[in-house]
Amino acid sequence: MESEKFDITEIYPKLYKAKQGSVEVIDVPLLRILAISGEGSPEGPRFKESVDALYSVTHAIMYMPRNGIQIDGFADFRISPLEALWSTNNGQPYDATNRENLAWEVFLVVPGFVTQKVVNMAIAKAQEHKPNDRYSDLHISSLQEKKSAQIMHIGAYSTTSKDVEVLNKSIKRRGYKPSARLHEIYLSDPTRNKSGRLKTIVRQPIIKI
Image (cartoon, rainbow, N blue to C red; front, top):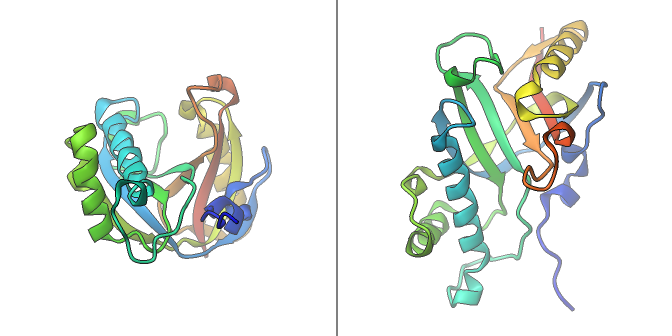
């Protein structure tokens, strides 16, 4: 019998479901992530290269046993939805329309056996098949957002501002304030879905005022 794959969307389904037009508050557990940071527009080449590096190395980790590389504690896994943390690189409040001044950290949730040593091994393998200058910036980290508010955005990635506004008003009305960077979770494949139907969870970690 085939063993079950590690699938973060099944382990914590509430993290990957949200309602359009309605804000809900959830508790987010500690997550292990493979991440890469940068600045500038998400439409720019640096962002694309970073996402490509992230996926190339994650696939290399997934296929290590097939390539004869034994990893302690290895568990088969499904690649999680792409996620990103957003802020601005000039200290101003987050503004999705000011895309050239955005600072971001894009990441995938990974199983616990994925250490920096495993990542470095995967980078060496990925570099052989698909060179990328951004591999060396990939790092393992932990994300602990705890209490967070979230809403579902349906539409182009560049049009989240209205839902961010709804989210922020609801947070303030409930007696909270943002405690960390804005978080987006991309549930749709942009190559297979029209931009008007892309599903993105917009999440904001919060603390009581």
